[in-house]
Structure formats: structure tokens, C-alpha cells
Length: 283
Image 1 (spheres, rainbow, N blue to C red):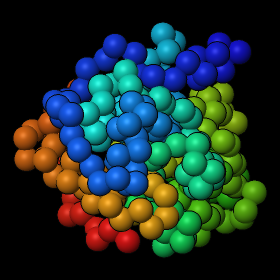
Image 2: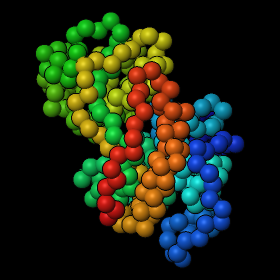
Image 3: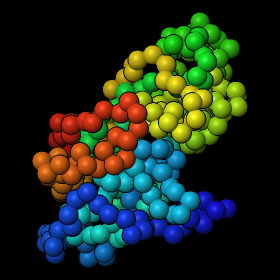
Image 4: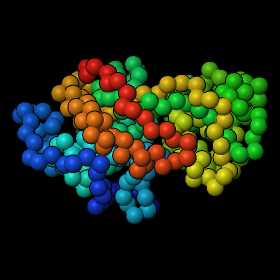
């Protein structure tokens, strides 16, 4: 009930942004930029349960690298952090909230792939992660995804509608090994209570859960995929995509991108400071 009440509050609170807010920027009439700037509100879908990237605090504020990336985009629109309206965008509903125009963009550890590009467009990528396994600290059996085949009784948890949830299927001895929830925090709880033996998603997200586990979790083996995170927007909105890419480029050049990382996901032990990846063409 508390989480639901906080989710309805929106806004970023009186937080700061790594990027300076543009002074009265102007945009072509009819563009998403002009429409958002005129309303004085940027609606952004994020994750609420991922340490380091998108998390809702008990105070109702939001924190994480995805949150800071949203602030960088908002700053270019002349909007302060408190003029961002954050809402939850679980993996299975990201395309839905964009298509229904409930948000202007989604910044939610959102891997760019062809299936999703059939429904939405992507700016970026702004970060490249890699899928990995998280297991209990004393687990020495599940040392790689291939170990799931030789341990058919082991269960692995991921999230409905996620790329990691689909990718891990080829490593399983049987379909019953895969447990799916709507959010990763439920997977972490299931690992903590022994209902599953592994959790799989992108390594930088797992590092956040490891850091919050009081020594109960660890990462197992090496990463086994490349996951480029993009900013999801309405299909075919090329001008907005180009604007977002320009903001990312400026942030990388000014050091605001690095600052955004180091104050969020970069604080987790083992997280390396990234460079902004090469941006994909807008379409």
C-alpha cells in the first residue's frame, strides 16, 4: 500500500542533476520537445526496484543511473529534476506504456533488440551491460549458465518480458527450471529463501543486489551476452531520438555522463566507469 501511494506522487523531489538546465530552449512546433517543454513536465518510465539504476526510496524519491540519464534529457528541455514525473515501467509493460502515451520515454535498463524496435524506437544506447548469474555466497555448483543443464533440479529466476529471461532458456535442462516474476526484487527474495538457486539479468543490476545482500549473494562466472541499453520512445519519432542523442553526447563531452554514473551505479563495488557507447542511427 505504501509503495502504491508513493508511486502516485510522481516527480523527482528536490534532487539535483549532473547536467545544467538549459535556459529557455526553443524547438520546432509540433515536436515532442516543444510539446514537453510547453507542459513543463517530462513523463519517464523507470524501474522501481533495481539498485544503481532505478529505485524508489521510502521517501518517494528516485535514484539510479537511469534516473540521472532522464535528468540529463530533461535539462536539455529546460526542465528541472522536480519537473520529471516518474512512473514504474516493469519489463513486460515497457512497450505498452510508450504506445499508450502514458510516458514520453522509458529509461529502464531497456535492451535494444529487433523485436522491440518493431513497436518502439530507441535513442542511444547509453550503456552496454552483459547478462550473468547471481547465486548464494556458498554455492559452488552454478559457476556458469551451462551448469544449469548439469544441475537440472536448480531453478533460475528472471523477469517476464525481459531479454535475460528469454536468453537463459537455451541453457536449461528443462523448462521447469525457469521461474519468472514481474520484478527482479522478487527474484532476489526467492534466492534469499532458497526457492530458486540463481537469478539472471544484466551484471550491473546484479551487482546492486549483491551489494545489498549483506554478503549472502555473489556473481557466478563471466557475462555471456552484450545488452545495449536504449531510451524507448514512440515509434518513428526521429527528431526526439536525435535530440536525446545530442544530450547524451554533450553529457559525455562535459563529464556529466561520468558524474551521473559515479554517483549511482558506479558506487557499487566492481562497477567500472563506462564510456558512452557509439550511438545507433535514429529511425
